[in-house]
Image: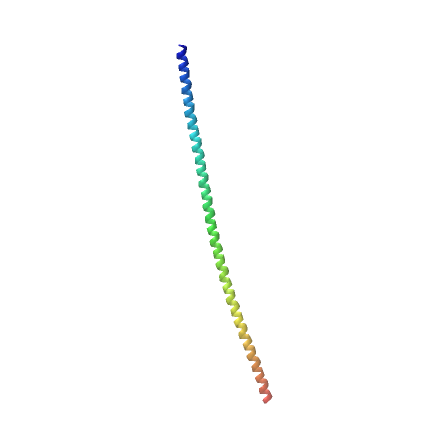
Length: 113
């Protein structure tokens, strides 16, 4: 009888240990799954942040490109205006020269009269 009780007790302990092992495995599995899900969620968040940062970078690059284009256009306009002023300046000198020449002719004409 003692041996039977001992065997039964041992069997019960083994069953308890088996159950504890099953519970522990399930707990570990759940823990790993939870951790894996958190990592996955965090990665998705990070990927989303990265995508937003990339979008912002593209947007800023487009703005910079646009700004560069505007600066280029303004520089070209400034150069055209400067050339226009130079042409006007040249024409003004030419008119001044003609005027002075005309004045000299008038002085000569008056002198001849």
